[in-house]
Image 1 (cartoon, one colour):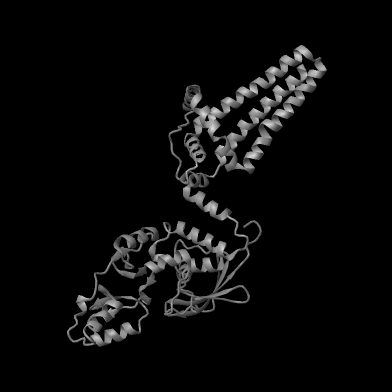
Image 2: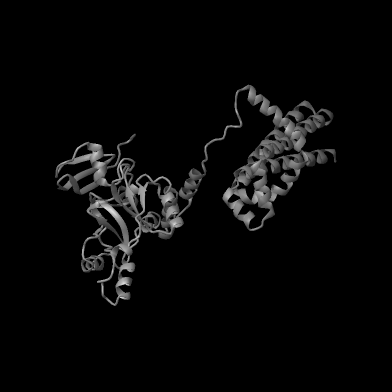
Length: 425
């Protein structure tokens, strides 16, 4: 009977120690996003886990204290029993069995279970651990003080805050999300990553360059302006005076033709200056996330981009930023077949020089550097420090780039072929 009681007591202590050891792994490893989602839905256990995680040092300290207490009793009881009832040979065998069982079922096994069912385990043990933390707070606080004093002697400052890694955690979670080849899931991952990229991309990387910007001279007759607007696919057009750099306002197509309609088609008494709105200029270094917020606050969809000298660089619209998230948006006025990127059967791509590098990387799953230039032509000239001639071929960042067309000082068309890096590169 004594042997049975001894075995049951040891098994009980190992089980309790294993339960507490698993609680440590579960609480530290539980998904914060999942816990906050459950807490928002009213799950009290999730709220307790969040509270434990917010005071991680105290929580882990309490768990370790409890675990060490139970682990202390296991060898103490086994030694007492062995001295009183067992021979030296039997003692060695029993101690070896208890040691193996303690390592297996008080450490390895519970941690494996906690890793497999992290959230469920954390929610299950939260009420128990929360109560123990409250009960042992004075003792654990004293032990924490001793630990902090030791760290201070080692010149380790626990008050230093590490930089926020929330974005990196989000990116990692997005990358780890399994899409299983589902096109919709793949698109979701791309969109989520694009949202995080908004605070790193500046407007000059996605703006419509002034060379491609549609503008109208304010001095033109109204009939001519009407003809220009009729053939223009854009809803907002910059109006300039004296020279194209001097933008004096933005004319909305709807506003213009509404005024024509109200005058029954008679434009004799219309004043173009009364129909235009003040232009909104923004610096080229504005980040997309900031500009998106500015569009929302000002209730505007159109802004003109200027450089540090105030010279016009181009324009950006709300749709341009949205396309960075959801991909190309086309309507009945857009030519969906012309994107500047034409994949070839041999794996290469023929692209216009003005094609944004971001579009190439996104569509072809490439990794062409985009820090120093917004377009592929700009990238080539930045790397070469010169304007290449037609027919020349260069290898830049493991991509073979052939110049197919050059118009004056501008690269018009290139052929890009990815090159597999050599082993060790």
